[in-house]
Length: 99
Image (cartoon, rainbow, N blue to C red; front, side):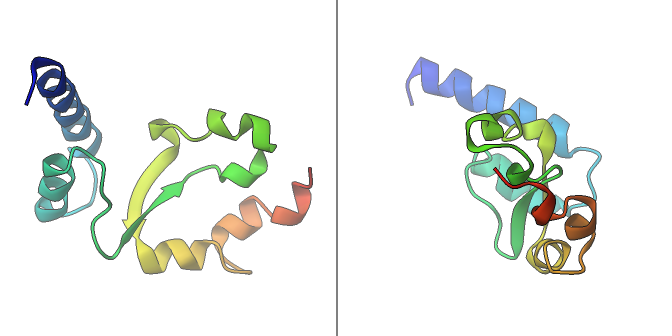
């Protein structure tokens, strides 16, 4: 690994350690995230946007696609949140965001 890659990996490791130290995920999942530099989502989990991307027009979606707006949650919970009567559906009803 070259110096630049090594520094990047250390920064990523530092970031993910800080981000997940107070989370409710298991130590095994935390280790997996750290070992993959945050580039892979553990099996059975999905990354959820706290404020869905569809609440912005296509041009502005990148404003929401940031780590502060993301969380790692179980896949089943994420799918339920986006169902017709899930909490994300009620908070951010897709019909209100037509572009």
